[in-house]
Structures are given as structure tokens and as C-alpha cells.
Length: 123
Image (cartoon, rainbow, N blue to C red; front, side, top):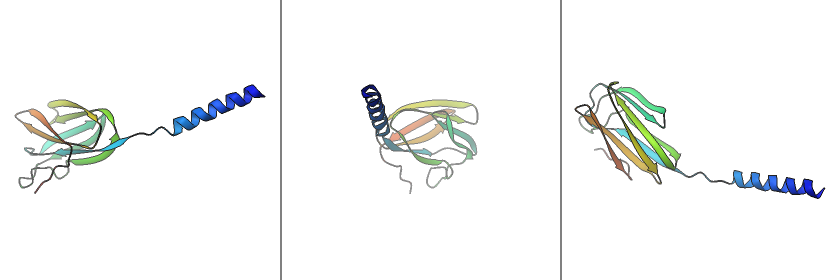
């Protein structure tokens, strides 16, 4: 009887501790920004597609209308992969510890990233 109770107690404690495990999340914002003109843009976050569209930057506010994405993700290491017109491709590895915002730009076949701890403001 004592053995059964001990096994039950250990199992119950293990279950309670595993259920109480906190997962920290933070906001990730992605903005496809300047110099896009009818470009096919694919953005993948940890191999999951989040943007797949033909995008054009607004000449007034320098961001693509359909090229903004925000979500809460777990803190830790992540990889953002960007493909433009199925020819230019690059990856951006980053560690989420708090809210993070990433601007994506391209010029002459190269892709550039700009990171910020605050959302981008467009006027």
C-alpha cells in the first residue's frame, strides 16, 4: 500500500510541476518596407509561411500594405527566411527575449533587415 501511495504521489507532483511550467511569449512584428514594386515576397518564420504575396511599397509611407505581420511567439531562438521573386533569398536568425520588430528591405537583389525593440512608425 505504501509503495502504491509513493508512486501516486511522485506521479501527481510530476504532473503538477509540468503543468505549471510557464512559457514566455513576446510580440514579433514584421514589416516589408521600402523599394518593393510588384515583387513576389515570401516570409517564413521557423519554416512556417507567414507572408506569400505580390507586394508594392507605398511611396508615401514606405511600407507594403499587405506586408505587415504581428504575432506573439515563444521567447528563444528563431529564424526568419525571406525569398523575393523566387531568386533572392536570405535568413535572419534572432533570439527573442522581449518584443522585437523587423523591417525587411531590398535593393539590387540583396535583402536587408532592420531590427528594433519598438514598432516602426510610418507617417
